[in-house]
Structure formats: structure tokens, C-alpha cells
Image (cartoon, rainbow, N blue to C red; front, top):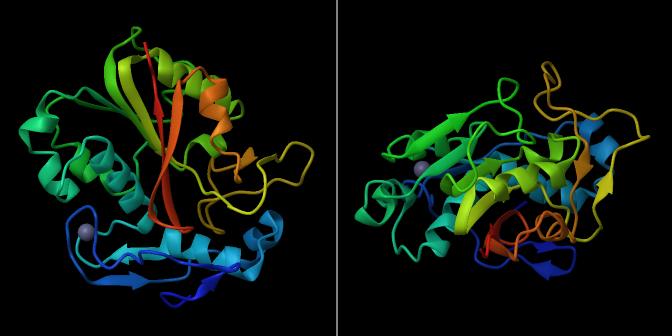
Length: 243
Ligand SMILES: [Zn+2]
């Protein structure tokens, strides 16, 4: 898809021209979806094009893709930081933040690791629905394209909320097909992300749509914001715990 092309009747606003993580301006698009996945997901050509852009538009310097940039952008927006993510993580504003990363959030791990109070846990040693941390341990929980693989995503988000302090946030991405509603793949043939050669543990339980905001509210969060780095290809959700 070329920058500015129509996406289901909607002009793509604010095309990403530089990396939110490192600031580099050389971004390269490669196709990542394969025909069987497009078919299982029942994506129209324009939908496949923007999901490809979300997963396959990469920074030539740091390797972040658009979904990683969207997550970085959401955190920068939430913390009102006017700069790139590589500067944010070493800033005084970020030094006190206790951050839990659930599975490597794409290339964002490289940057999050520079935070003095960063904790990374991984599936299958750690399960998002049973986190081994005390209540209110963190200021931020981050995950990227993980929730759609959790059999009970609301239970996963409820756990994320439990380990957050008041005013803490869960910032995450899931692939969102913006013109349809969320559906469970229960009863449908199995569909995997990952790669065709190595589907691994990436069985998809939930295909998120326009109502992706409901799950964090059902899990007890007070607020869910959708922050766009680029619509519709690059969005992240920020769920806020009130008290
Ligand atoms: Zn970069």
C-alpha cells in the first residue's frame, strides 16, 4: 500500500515517516502476511494491506516495526514526552517507572531494558492470567500482540490491572481489523500467527475488531484510550486503572 492511499474509504492520516523508537527516517515495507492466514482471518485486500503495514513497515536502523512504534508512541503520549522512545527510557521522567513487560514487545524490549526498573517475563514460564507479583507492583504493564493468543483475554487483562498501582496503565497492541467486530475463533479451524514454517505457540484465540476497547473495561479498567501512530495500521490501547 502506498502512503496516502484510500483504506476502505478512509484516507490514511499522518503516514509514519520516521521511527518513534529511534527517530530514523529510513522505513522499509515488506510483506509479512501469507495467503492461508489472510484466508483464515477473512481479510479483504485493503485490510490485509494495512495489517501488512502494521507488521512489516520496519525501521532500517533499530528494526522496530509499525506496531512497536505505535506502542512506543502511546507511551510517549501518555507520559507527555516530546521526543523519541530511545531518549524517553533514559530520561528522569522514566527513571522511577516500574515496568512489567509480558513477552518481548517486539523491538521495544531493546529500549525498555534501559529502564532501571524493568521486569521482563515470558510465556510459557509466565502466564498472563496468573502473574507471580503482588498487587500494585507496577506503574506500567506492556504487551504487544500477545492478548489475542490468551485463551481468556479478560482474565489476562484483569491480572494486568491487579499488579498495577492506582493510575497505572496497561499499554498494549493487538492486531485490530477496524471495520468489523471482535470474534472468538472458538469452533473455527485453528489459525496461527508466527510464520507459516514455525507457527509455534501462536494459536489465535481472538480476532480483535472495532470493539477491542471493551475487554479492558470488562476487566475492571476505568478507561481505555486508543492512540494512533497511524490509522488504521498503527494503533495501541492504553487502559488506565483508576484506584
Ligand atoms: Zn528505529
